Length: 235
Image (cartoon, rainbow, N blue to C red; front, side, top):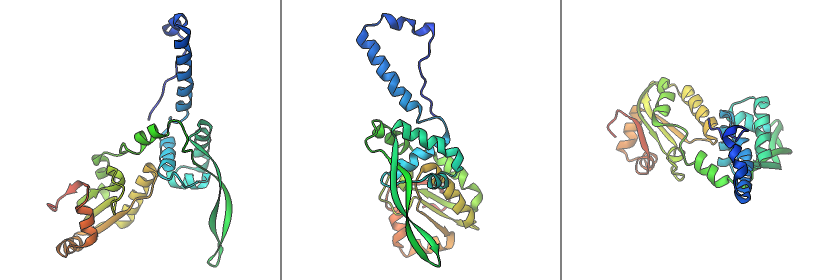
């Protein structure tokens, strides 16, 4: 959790009144900026919401969509979203969403949502902080997948190492893998990262066969930047 402190009245700051006026005005201006930043951080849900908008800069999201993707209740995220709008990080956006009306029929429904404000003063700094700095360590990711089965190979790429053109973010190879649990684990990671992940799961036999026939998918993962978190196959 990241906090930005505000200056408070105390004897520690009383000497400020003896500073030249231009320095005092500079300090006041900085404190106003700190007030804006103070609205941006304060809970893990805020960070998840910010990552969601940063990773989906051109896509508007309603309260319902934000709630679903970050896995917090609509009531609990409403204040955070409105605070981010107040700070200028996001702005309101009307958009159309295709909704099913029954029997395979769809219609475009007008929705009120929010979208990233690309003119936000601190946008570049927040992108560096929340996108370019990985939210998980290798140990974190290994621990998340620990209960899914007997993992022989666990590779991360893509969003985890800031390589945006790779074919997959996660490769899992193992035996007796619980694919439903893998799906839930990935969904949990997605909610914290703020974007959908591409992942591939193989049992050991199929992976070894694909390796032997120089399968393109496997080669595209192994021949491009990646990080091996678990490697019991000697790849």
